[in-house]
Length: 277
Ligand code: FE
Ligand code: FE
Ligand code: ZN
Image 1 (cartoon, rainbow, N blue to C red):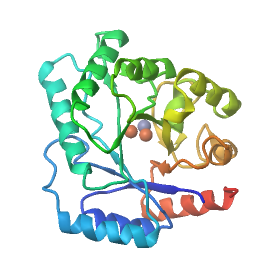
Image 2: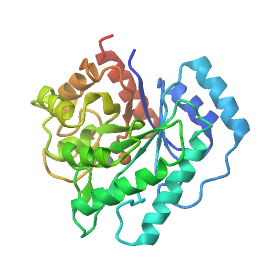
Image 3: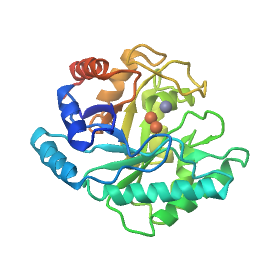
Image 4: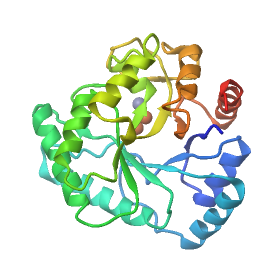
């Protein structure tokens, strides 16, 4: 069965997201843990979470993906910004303890002018500190397009972060199809080669989720602009190959395409029709 969902607004709570997901034919979803620009999260509504968990069990929703605010920068030069990223992620992980099957995805960070080596060091320091406490949630590093000074633009950079994290058993990777394509990995003409390279450098056992997006731009452009499924440089044929690849087909797929709910519903229908059980 295709595990597919899209990014939903978290403003109305978990039960509302669960209902929205079911309405558009999804069986999972992604949400921001708080305003994507950062700031305080609303107090946890434990009754809403209990209602959601019951609804999710009844409706086959599983493996939802929390996304950290994209403005956090664990690799910032300014110590206050790094501390803010740490405190936010720690708070997010504490909150996610209430949602047993959730995973937590974050953008590794941007080294600004410090160089990738330094950035990788700062990000892994932060993860080591975070994992001093035991959390149930699997934490995912997202593959990045390499816009500006983004860290995580190559499989090697992600591997270096993982290697520097001591308790890395709950550390995985979320592969964003738009980002890797923009980063120069040719998933259109050589998906097999890209996945072999992923396996050789990171290990496919670390791959826990896929962000399924088309790209407005071309291979290797380092831009990061998402397109609707089949309407960008990746195209529908390559996306069909991604969801059906034996190494990927059992992972959860999350759409982050420029859509409102009806558009997501159409894409989910389309992808289900292309999926081979
Ligand atoms: Fe992201
Ligand atoms: Fe993404
Ligand atoms: Zn993106």
